[in-house]
Length: 239
Ligand SMILES: Nc1nc2c(ncn2[C@@H]2O[C@H](COP(=O)(O)OP(=O)(O)O)[C@@H](O)[C@H]2O)c(=O)[nH]1
Ligand SMILES: *[C@@H]1O[C@H](CO)[C@@H](O)[C@H](O)[C@H]1NC(C)=O
Ligand SMILES: *[C@@H]1O[C@H](CO)[C@@H](O)[C@H](O)[C@H]1NC(C)=O
Ligand SMILES: *[C@@H]1O[C@H](CO)[C@@H](O)[C@H](O)[C@H]1NC(C)=O
Ligand SMILES: [Mg+2]
Image (cartoon, rainbow, N blue to C red):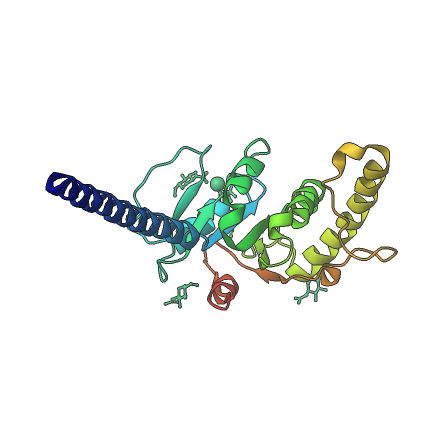
């Protein structure tokens, strides 16, 4: 009789102990997951530098980050680093090669705090088709459609043949208009391109002001003499 009771008590405390262990385990796992989640969302402070090859992304990137930066990268990988004056913001230099640009864009777009589209203001007229196509794809991407501010940065303003941002905006709008017609026709013919989004207002010429999102144009020169003032003030006013 007494033995029975003893066994009952010890069995009871044993299951109680197991219960406590399970509770502690659960709390620990939850805490670890929470910390990991926080860290993951904290890298949602990325400024993505995109644009065609040779636009000046890497030079702008190098001008913005801390000089202590020593890591080496091959040109087929993205560069990522803290901003010099704000270490909670990361800046990502995305390779412009056609085969790589979307791969890295897709990797980083969910962490985007802002998107910078760098343009070579000297060669824009020659490269307008390629530039507009890339920009159109970025703008129609669902992840960055509404909330992420976009800066179109007209680089190489120090060059005598550089076009200013007013001219570049007009040139791009004209090309985006043509591109939209092509894309819409494609959309009618093949249902495969259903990911295409109509940008702007139907029946009106394409205008950046018709997109209900924050798009700004700015000028800069990352070469000599360096002038990144407009870019920096956009960065500071991001929130
Ligand atoms: N004159 C001038 N040249 C620039 C400027 N920015 C970049 N470059 C030059 O353009 C070339 C391409 O720059 P890079 O940063 O490698 O372009 P990326 O391919 O977009 O990374 C380099 O030779 C730079 O020195 C600028 O503002 N002015
Ligand atoms: C990364 O930066 C280094 C120097 O800062 C540069 O040589 C390299 O081309 C960059 N990589 C990309 C993908 O832009
Ligand atoms: C750095 O950026 C974070 C996130 O945007 C912001 O909360 C913070 O105020 C910034 N700090 C400075 C010094 O600009
Ligand atoms: C931009 O360039 C065009 C043509 O070169 C000129 O007419 C216009 O005044 C310039 N705009 C600004 C804001 O400098
Ligand atoms: Mg580069």
